[in-house]
Length: 402
Image (tube, rainbow, N blue to C red; front, side, top):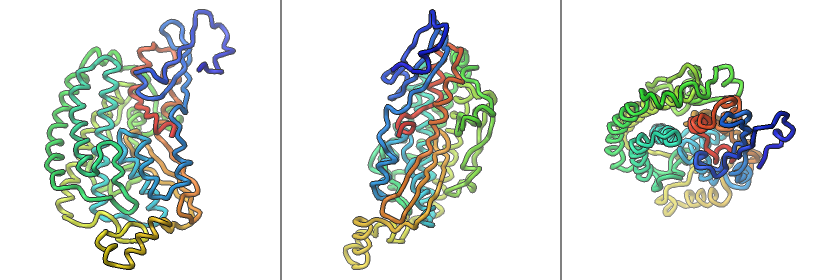
């Protein structure tokens, strides 16, 4: 696919059009960027969006509010629980309800575990693209432990769909906590090992420092959020700026960079993993303090009643039937709710007309403005720099195209 904007470009002698993707191994998904190059130098770079468009938002208009939850898993498959949590928080805001205290801690716990997993994928794959394969082998063993924890909690390793409107599908099992405590210790050591391989490595520094430099003003004008924004020097994090799930009561820092280049993004994500592990440790402590308790609301107009009540109570049986066949009674209105996902601000805008399905769902993905800015960041640099830049942007095609 050749970009139309390049067709009438003068002085094309010695230049060529290169289609990077949508099946290039360094794009790690169905992404395409059309490059206009002169030798190894990039003159223009035009991102092409839509190869993985599945009409997720349109599908949501024909599903019940609860049925849309599994679709959110498929947007950012590196940290699906954060998508679940972001969506159900928007619906709960529309309903005017709140999940139980134990559920809120579990949501934070699992969200921060998947934030670590997402950053491990980003750094590990970015290192492979640049040539540092050893770091990938060290850190992906921790990702497997996180997947084991997700499997314990949800029964599935990748597309968990454990979050429910009004709470969680179920509580974590007894064996979850010991393995999670083991992860806290092993993952911290692995991050140290990763830093010993990369942070002060002169080859890694040469390939990442000064690549994709962005000022705070440029980042804000493009709509940057998340690690890519904080690497530019702005300490903006919705967990602090617009707290949700009691994040204001947790003790953690917001790491920032100075230049916004690939190296600073790596440093920010590395420190964010350490901070997420600190939050996970606090969550485990809070779960012990709270003790056993409900993990989903007892408002059976929103959540399915327990099976034992369905089998023994006529009212619970009716509620079960009404929820499954007719859905929730959602008031007419509209709402926007945003959370701090691994890549930045993940927002859900929902319009309700009072029916069992949303009248309109729109997702604000953090990847969209970041991917669109790629020409500003890579113009005039080498093709090898482009691959380093793409990896540190951490573009997830399922979230980008929806």
